[in-house]
Length: 140
Image 1: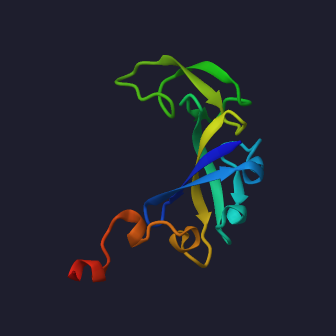
Image 2: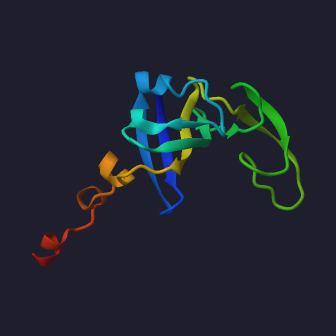
Image 3: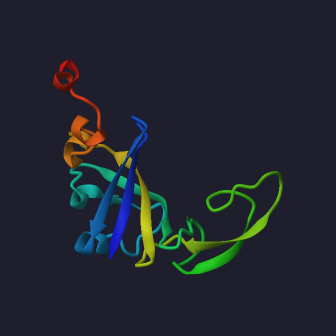
């Protein structure tokens, strides 16, 4: 079992992606959209995250308000899974709002921040990772 977790930080407007496998992924199984959890098992000590959505392995979105984790066709007038042009409603296939083994990506947002920043804890976003040149490299 493997999930890609997108962590959005509303304070600085940045998002970070992390892959979770096996035992860590099993901790997220059965959770619903809107539930919060302690992110210490992801390496983010002191952080609390809320599940805001996601998608399955085929690309269908998780929809809050749809029970279970099965794929269903629902009549939508907007929201996740459908962006109408005008006042048109349409039947679209979505997946229920519960995380299970068919889920590929989980979107989360930071509810409570820890003492250290996400960049420091995950080791992402540094100059050598993003392709940016450091001050020493620019001088050369």
